[in-house]
Length: 127
Image (cartoon, rainbow, N blue to C red; front, side, top):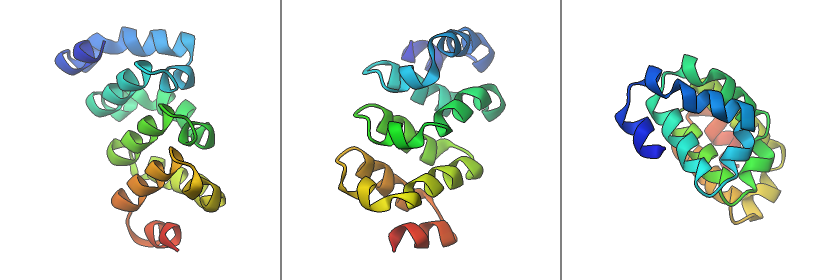
């Protein structure tokens, strides 16, 4: 499916988003191969097309950050997502940065946030 998402036009992969919506975006984000499909969708599709998926993922930032596969989806969202997505992820990380900083998976999300955030969000996370 990754190859389909990368090589097809965004409208042509809407069926992938629809199927993930039925099965659960966060469940796919926690899956060994599903997380890669979710990442490719974030990278390749317009934000308006992935809005429902991203909103679902942003509702589970803490759980995804601590997951061995979900953390990659969040790192990807920090890099390729909107400014508001980055800010929302940062707020969750800031709420318990000590715990996230000690977790082997979540620390990668913190690192990605430090690399891609700007201004006060980055400063607050670094402190």
